[in-house]
Image (cartoon, rainbow, N blue to C red; front, side, top):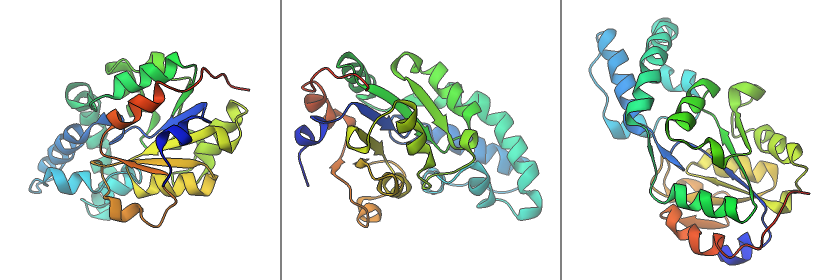
Amino acid sequence: MKSSTALFGKKCLFIFDLDGTLVDAYQAISRSLNYTRRIFGYPPVGLNRAKKSVGKGERHFIGLFFPSNEAARALTVYRRHHKKSLTRYARLKPHAARLLRILKERGCVLAIASNRPALFTRIIIESLRLKPYFDLVVCADQIQRLKPHPKILRHIMRTFNMPKESAVFVGDMSIDMATAARAGIDAVFVKGGSDSVSQVKPYPVRKVIASLKELIPDAATIEVCRPR
């Protein structure tokens, strides 16, 4: 596995997953899920179980906790509650703001590629004041393809006319690593999110980190770069 210095030295486009990578919204997700389950007469679900169930879109997520004949109504209740829950409970992960600031100062292009619906992604970005950092935010519902389909990463690279060699995708799930592999770009895996290191072993991950803090020293050494 190569060092982050070797990896970052050639990168101008940094693409981040949102949930579990830059933002901890698990409390918001868990509270909205359990509110919805209470409305439908079901017992609460533990935080860890909810955390391990995210990442494949909200319809899939709700479908894990409600029978098919109630899933559509449950999703409506969940969405209504989640708008408020996110603004109250979503938090930036440690060192995220500093890392983004440094990358921005170095002239890097920053983007988000998320399976979270655009509506809720926008709520998170606005409430946590992340908008100034990002040149582009793309959600799966905007391009009609969920990760691990590589369309979301290809769309971002195409938007900035960036070659694969200039891009890196930072995420916390095996589907993020699979998406990067299918798009042919380098990937960094952040521990502590929804998946474990063992779950990403099948993928060509260039670096595994315990915290975004580990990326800061090398991010600060990137030569000032601009998109082609």
